[in-house]
Image (cartoon, rainbow, N blue to C red):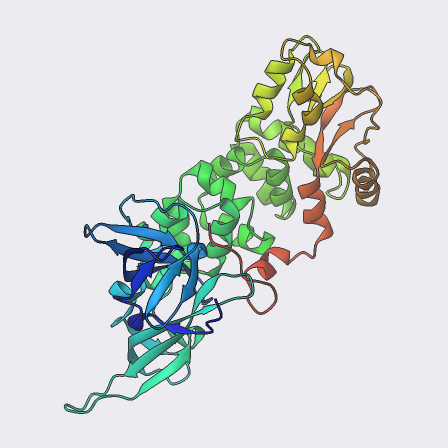
Length: 421
């Protein structure tokens, strides 16, 4: 587009043209996604008013040029569905201009009079700077206008503009990893309010993405009974990792509060060292009997609740099908299943030659195993040919990365900006 900075107040009313020069409407506002931290919000698109007075949303990726007299769109269809604002979005002109803010360095109160959007190297647009007028208490004097970086003011983040109910509504639309990153940025009081408002299943998903320190701190806020309920809702391997970090007396007390069928696989995982295949594995991979059909196998891995790495293969075993299983026969890769006829038995497409991991396999051995066989999941089998579980590449990466890698994910000075959901 060639434009380095555009002030949004000057865009209102500009004509919007299609790629062939036809006039589509005029600019009414711009939409940005609010963030929990101090990072500049990403501009999502333009609110365009058609000749019929209907307002539609046009994504920024469709904007090819912003000139002093017009905005031009790229080739392609435009959705005529009416614009509807989401909870985590803000209208830059309608809601951000005239908003009260505070200047971080001086502590002075100010009002936003304009906002500048800037393109990034990734072709996104962000609200990089704000023009603010300092509030003067003396009647008849207008404060000076300053142009400041977004981070130089407070009062416009998601937590500043949303109550706890609003935050919970926004978090419902976000991935657990993004909720965890946002939660770690909140003050302790707001963290506790959000945690109290999340149901056990959702909180368990978020807990699995938190750093160890955040997990311990928030677990301490929960009552022992609710902490046990959340641990039951977590994946057994993640629950075992978390309990490993607690004092023995505390972890034993929580295990005692869990239902026996939920605590048993967690106890089994905790019997292995955390940096071995036995400690890293999940005891709930996709397991099928040899008389299951390919159609059944595909239906199982199509389940959206199964993580992608676990959905990459199914494991074929003699009964019983719960871990530890009966005799392990082999695995069937998802790609192999897709090439087979739906009525075929999985026993006919099973890969019985793929090497297995022993529960005592070290982290280095597991890493070499994945690299050698180009896999994202591998079976963990004991000496008696019982399938104990499966190790996935995400668990391996979690242990290979520095202990504070989740904290670094939300630190703008140490990593790139985390994209919004």
